[in-house]
Amino acid sequence: MKLFLFVFLCILYTYGYCGSDVHIGYRVILAVPMSYSRNFTGRAFLMETAQMAPKFRAALSVEAVEQKYSCSLDVFLGDVKVWSSGHLSKFYTTEKCVIQLTRDGDLQLTGQKDSVGWRSGTSGQGVERLHLLRTGNLVLVDGLNLIKWQSFNFPTDIMLWGQRLSSETRLTSFPSNSSLFYSFEIQHDKIALYLNSGKRKYSYWEYKPSKDRNLTFVELASKGIELYSDKHSRIGQITSQRLEPLRFLALGTNTGNLGLYYYSPDKGNFEASFQAINTTCDLPLACKPYGICTFSNACSCIRLITRGEGLNSDCDEGISEGFCGRNQADMLELQSVSSVLRGIPQGLNISKKVCAGLCIEDCNCVAALYSSGTGDSSLQECFLYGMVRGLKQVNRGSGLSYMVKFPKETSKDHGKSSGLKKWVLVVVGVVDGLIILLVLGGIGYYVVQKRRRNTSDTRNPT
Image (tube, rainbow, N blue to C red; front, side, top):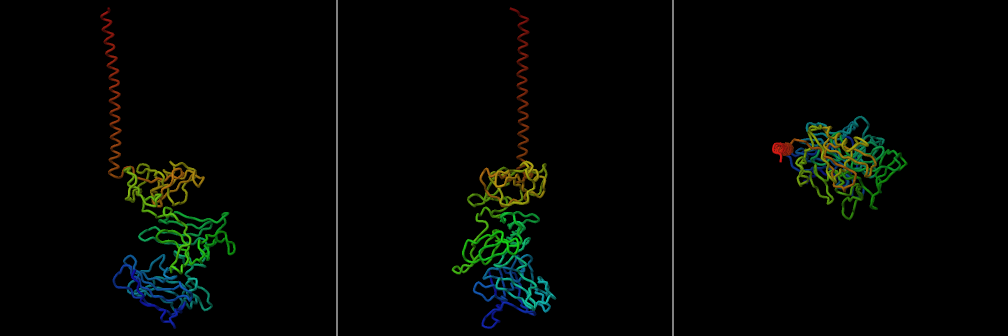
């Protein structure tokens, strides 16, 4: 990665000390390159906290993203980006990237022709300065030091030590080159990890407090993530496996795994002390679409199943899409295969045949998972899927049946196969008919011959 520090503003402060706040009227400009340069990053550090390394630092950044340049306000802990104004919606610009704390107290990012790409929305609230706290929380405060805006209220993919997330909030991360995204969600009865696809979402890990108690908020403490029903009642905890104090919780961009991280002075970087998922095949995107994660943690892919050729090393995408109804689709059960993804059950205590039928009739369904109630759950459940992801090999007898939708007659090969079956049926019918005719003819010939003999014997008595 090309990293350009156009301005390192800490040198403006006495004895090289970089302050932790800036006041109204503050303005910094970064130039945006004329031509696109892949992996380009330009950064101006604005503030840093007065503490031992790794310190928190706030920066104005210009980064190359998908043939364009984004402009953002970021917070770093050491070299790790722990918050960004452009996490959910990027601000693309040309010519320049500007941060300013206006006279009326609004923190803004602007670009060419002074177009506003992001703002705090605190105009007219008496804001006097932007301050970076020792916790990494970036805040706008008034003359009485009251917080009018804070970055902790806009979580990204990282939760810092001391930060609280209330029920119905979430962290999100976005895999590159994908329309899918991960989320870590705090709900009233549990915390859970989800893979999101359009309006559908599928859970792949969860933790529930004991005795089904309601969850109000979670907090990242030095020893783990703590769950509370109110300010003083802790109802659950996920504990770090190291003695070192935790610095942050992160939702992995590439894997979707949830990890707790501490700082290792010996290695000079952050290490995971806990991960929610420790097996590759339990990750939601361990393999490509229509791929199956095997016992050896390798990926084997479903080939075009309408050809009946089983598995091979090349995945075929989209074989379950664009058709529905019993006249167009059918379901194929994959032996010893399940999915780590779970949605909302579409039916309870129904048969596997009914479950398959629900997917066939649903034009948005491409696969179904049926639980016979012999595994972890005592209920017979049916889950429908809008994608074929998160598949893994399981032992027989798990009580789970994974079925993939496929077209009855869409490919030429399958058409030939169906034609062959019809031809075989016709041939079998003709052969059966010939056999019947031969049998009947033989019987008739025998009867006729017998009658002739009887007639001949009558005419010529001994």
